[in-house]
Image: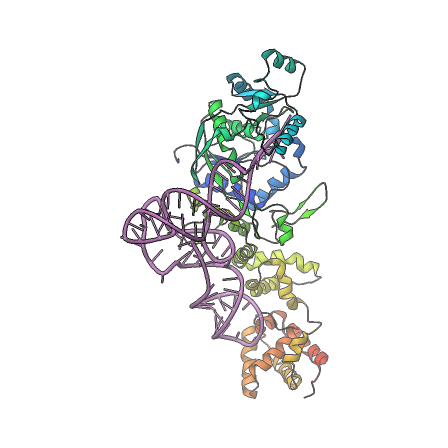
Length: 510
RNA sequence: GGUCCGUUCGUCUAGCCAGGUCAGGACGCCAGGUUUUCAUCCUGGUAACACGGGUUCGAAUCCCGUACGGACUACCA
């Protein structure tokens, strides 16, 4: 397998935003290509013009760009097998469908959609299922049931038609799936799938087989929903005389509650994004949230996604894209579907957040500060971020965790006041203010040493002093090491906050 | 309904192919510790082989069946 040229593809249809299941499929293809020094290409499968959604293709490109997944060939990149968009390749498919017609593996069918649905209804009322197959096709309107002359006449009169695959009547198709192993299916349960639609474009089945062959795809790695049509595809390769690629069908991503595959609706219902990027439906204007907009780092998003259905076989959990590519094998992809776990996704983001430099995080935090009307200097933000990043999962939580570094408290947490502002607190804090005002080197270490010495000397309770002190500085029972806080806000601000707190809370009657 | 695929802690999973481990890790949750607060952090704990047969000295692991779940069943991909 390593000898041949590994070429894989991701082939979405531009019918809307790509959801995370699709991103994961693309990711596994990408990792597989990288691991095997192969090529990864992007092809757009837009053979159904009725489902075309404006902006979807751009969305797909932007999503992968954000994720850091790069293509070697295809849409947005070009390459030796261009065009990579199926709607621009209809002439190519035509040749192959002609070949199939010639060899007798395909035939013209003139049944209208209305006729077909009427027959289906009829069957249904008799509690039977209609399949367009060997036992039924002779009763229907097609080039197999009609005489040569009748067929020719219909064709000449431009009667609308589709071209169907002539499914062998009773043949066992043996397939191999890299993830599931050997799979067998008898053709008698299959139907004569439409290969070419009346609009002159191929269906997915024909187009993907032809393109994968022409584009020299070595491994088709796609979602499990395609497994049922694998026999058709295998038969198509054989009928066309193409060499078959290897197949790997990935398990599905399931919704976190209940069962079923994750769908576009689930995200906003459950409160987490299903899409990498935010998406606004061009028709309805409905907005669906995205991981990027929710504050996830692309590295965390990818890491989390990679581990949903694959594992390295050891206990590592944190991987860069390159490390993933290094470790990835299809053998270690699981067989069963995975439920998405929003909590673990947050944990991943936290891991990446704390790994990032304070400078990088400060840069990300700056716009928030600006929006809050805070004027400050970058080095202070860097220091603040260093103290609070451990406590956050997202940059978006920074403000809540650090507002008191930039603004004096306007109110004091009522519960904390009740618990921490005692009869003697006023005098003690007034005394502390005097102590602190006498300190010239206002570092965390220095203020801490002096303050603690004072507490000890006066035999005050450490908890009583520190909690009251925190209340006046922060306004609430939260935040990092208090002496770190006052070192950052500075001596003057510290004294002002003490003064203001003293005035606001006043002396409590005992 | 039919066809195919799947099933280990609440969740993601290791172990299964080459039967023998107290069934391991992570997220979450709970408890304890550290701490001036909250959070972090550290330590510990919680919790699973869907069920029933068979093969075997021995089965999560191999075989069969059942149940449950999912995908597919369009002139959609």
